[in-house]
Length: 442
Image (cartoon, rainbow, N blue to C red; front, side, top):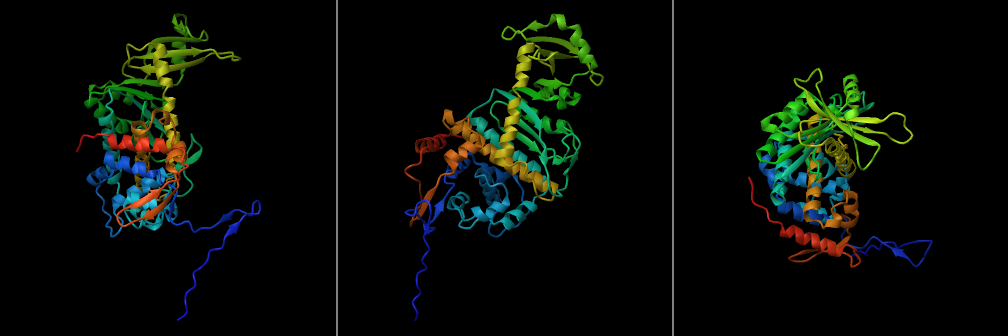
């Protein structure tokens, strides 16, 4: 019998320093050990329990359950793996295996079959899961006031996805999704994928009404902000209705009537005490499509080296807010652009490459769940100086932690490096997660 010789791996050396030696015999290593923190938080918040209770899957499975597939996709996004193609690289990672709780993870074909099994009804079900997930966070940190920021996004498409179309405004082939954020926390309250031909305010009433109604019933004071694309009577009436009442601050595009009213009221405008180049004023205005006149706030700003001042108009139903306060409050809606940027750059919200429209819509919902999982953990469990960080920074400081894995009879150990600079922060966050107290909800 011939003895089998042990295969020896060739040692790699570098020309710049021949004393350095490299090989690939380090054993089982994970590069995303910090995802275990998110798994602890997710378990505490019961996200996958909500998925199981509220989504009716029609796909039969043998090895990889539907919940396992969603969990694998959520954590792949947190680890900056943008689509199912990356499953071929992550499915062998020890951290990912422990997070999903399986010795074998779903491959790229498995995850693609899972996505393509979605039905149109799953879109609303995933939106409901997201809403209930946020409710659990609001149990821990109750909200007395909520700022509802509405914005749309252009997601460029390069394939032949159903629903993608050339948009004359963006001059590109796009999807045109709609997003609603809570202005102070950055929580994504709702997202909806729309075809590329939809204009900004299309279907916005149906999208917004359930959000306002839900939080109004919880007796939360609501304030709504929107750009000029959402300056439509449907939104005004919605925010003025008792059932969905909210203070609104919506920018208006300049027109001949607004310009005339501005000229007529110029002399009444007040100079800003902090900046002599800015003046504020107000008047009542009724557009042709409006059933009544509404209050309009005005800001006039003379900028250096410009001949004419820049003028802003914001319509509101608020009676107590001064023109300066109202316009400054509206201008703060720029934070919604940052939340959108976080979603697109950090969680690949624009990576919608499936053929079927409803499949891409469900995929977007899973991306929103990953975004909110990070956002909620950041504000509920991270120390103050870490809460300002975007996901790219959190990945480099907390998620992308290398560890050597060892398996024993009764335990599975991750050995992180002694030189890990954020060890104390890591342990602080883990304790903060474990201290969370959540009241069970249906």
